[in-house]
Amino acid sequence: MIRMTSFSIKTRLQPDGTLQVAVPTGLPEADVDVLVVIRPLDSGNGKVAQKSSWPEDFFDKTYGCLAEDPLVREPQLPQEARENLL
Image (cartoon, rainbow, N blue to C red):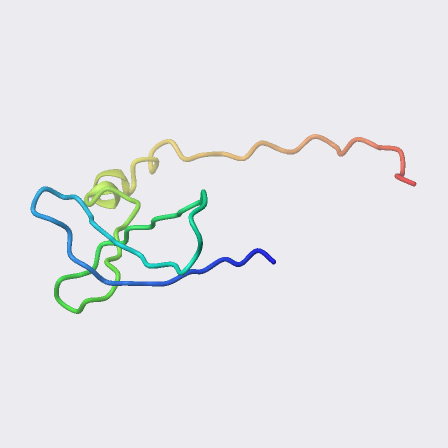
């Protein structure tokens, strides 16, 4: 039986930005696949920090930019007839 173990820890990065983690697995010596996910925490509340995928001033710079030349959706072409699948 193949067993996968997952766990969560909170730790602090070294001043140079490196992370050192020692994990006792209880498994015999073998090759393993390890996945590391680093999620920065908000220093104020200790919860996972949320970062917007939009640049900070994106909406201020782009809001209303198409007011004088709005996008127009052209009429769609008729849907082509296809053979029925069996």
